[in-house]
Length: 43
Image 1 (cartoon, rainbow, N blue to C red):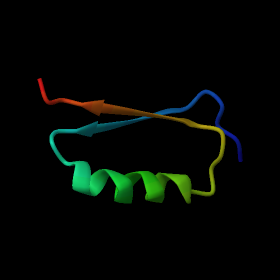
Image 2: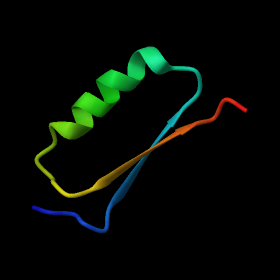
Image 3: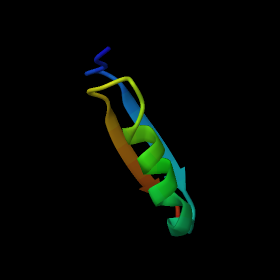
Image 4: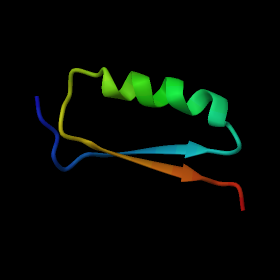
């Protein structure tokens, strides 16, 4: 199934070591076509 209008937001705060695991997991989902936005809340 394709989800062209779906945005997935990943919020992180100094967790670079876990970011690859999260993105790998999202990329192996059966859904396709969604957008991934990563926001680092380190301000």
